[in-house]
Image (cartoon, rainbow, N blue to C red; front, top):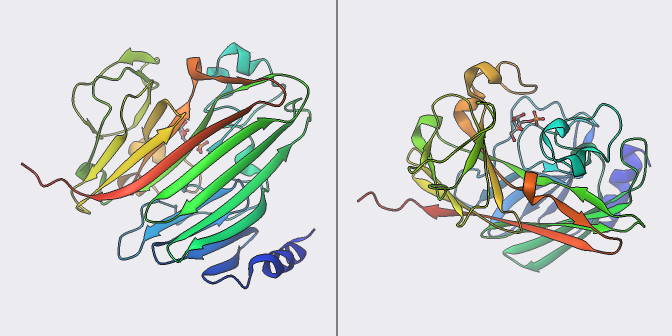
Length: 314
Ligand code: TA6
């Protein structure tokens, strides 16, 4: 189907639902949700959440104002789904790496593919549930068969439930992440707690293992892979006077990333000063926490993003 036929088909299925809009952003189709709790926008390409904003609050999710909405290119911002590998393939475990042939993009390939919008359910006036899916079939990049599903719940909190099913005849292994870009007041105004004492790999310092006993404050480029969290991460933003809690299920790791000025200049669709207004807290399972699925087995990872008032400073 071409874009016009796709839009027509989506309007016929979902266009009459209260609070639901089918949108075209240049080459990309999105579904917009507006209910009593929040507004949200999900692009069919990559099943990428691009917006989530609780009513009366500032946006929770950051999206670059330099997105070009081109087919085949993941939006800068939102919550890209990194699968069947996280980061550079070369930095993945052998068990994951050896499954691929050829030159591979960072963060896998499903964030660049067109997912299907299977269903939208208005659970209640404050809760909307969308299900998107993607069937991955063997090709020159990856010789396995999988069915991916993303369930997005737009309510007082944002919930993503990412399911991978081995729908083929051969076992495969993968790493993955929900690469959440958060909207912040100023990078100097935020700190991330909940990671104190958790071992992390500093990818900017030869992947050396480190730990911090204090909350993470960002001054310059940060790219850390925290392994095996034991509590939710909490982003405190004194500029917006709010805290954002990220809780997850089956995502034991978290990547904390801010490009800083120098890397910002090299990033696509990213203004030089945009590093001031975003930070990535990426719920993941990487390295030793890779997953392997036998035929018929499934894996489910969940992310809960909720906004809280800022604990009154003591
Ligand atoms: O998750 C952190 C990271 O791997 C950074 O190193 C940076 O590359 C970021 O992801 C963005 O990657 P992308 O391929 O979306 O530009």
